[in-house]
Length: 393
Ligand SMILES: Cc1ncc(COP(=O)(O)O)c(C=O)c1O
Image 1: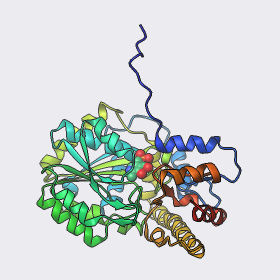
Image 2: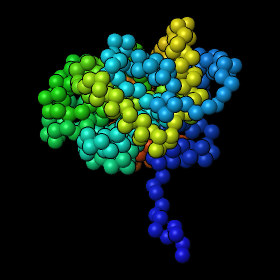
Image 3: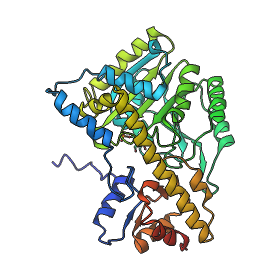
Image 4: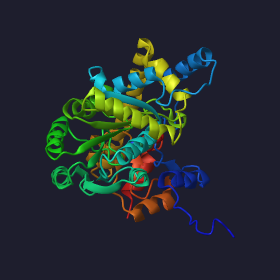
């Protein structure tokens, strides 16, 4: 008896699968526009200097690797919540769980919704990060989509989005990218967030924010507008937060789940249930990345250094967007949308065939949906990419 006869091979992950293809490619001029991490002007991985500094302090300061509490380090959690939701958030209505990255927080929130019969459906944007649908369906939620971004016109599908949300069954959850929408790079304006909040309140929809890019859009304090605004407006809000990108702690799995409850009593009960979800999946969170974040955010000088360093990363991306648009324009191609997009990503609108042509003919790698990571572009490879893009059939 082969117990594994019933196992069928799972599809390769679209992003990590592409990375393997990139690594195996022998062409020296190859370009990786597929990865989901920040790269320097030299196209190298980047450890923020303040993160290195904090890490040295952490190594000296901690002599143990004891288990953290199930909900994680409370000081780390409080500092993460302050950064995401602002200092004025009502702490009596706030539950915080330190999680295994942002993905861990999404899954924790999904299981919490299902296990406690809060809702059975979640609406996600079309398009979205490819991990969203399987994360929610694996937890048992029904996933539906709402129109968000038109890849031909590169515009937000604002009216269709609202009309679609209005038709959702009451008490459905709605997943919202707090800023730097992945993959489109297209965000709501502040006035659109306000209008959306009113519509969601009227239709009794539950906001579930995913925030993986705070600081990559306009500024840390602007990128969290939606999350702060909804926290004050709604009786209940869920948040999945990631430090993978804005602290460059990808492999340290450093994230948080926040819940705003209607009142202190229901928030406390919800917190107890969140702890059970955590306990029976990963038990308690990893400590190293959280110690680094805590070291930075509890120190005024290091916090300022972090703000400065994320600004430099944000500025490099904005500069590459600008230069790229100018160079495309010189080739007679209008790519102005590219400059308006926010964060690491943009949906180019390139077809599957064009993406394959770029990989095969030019060694320029990106996932089949045509999403590119702007941090994969530098002043050195920019002309090469522009030549390839503007020559596409
Ligand atoms: C939109 C979005 N949400 C969540 C995550 C999860 O981040 P983490 O690596 O912290 O799990 C990512 C990572 O790429 C993302 O792009």
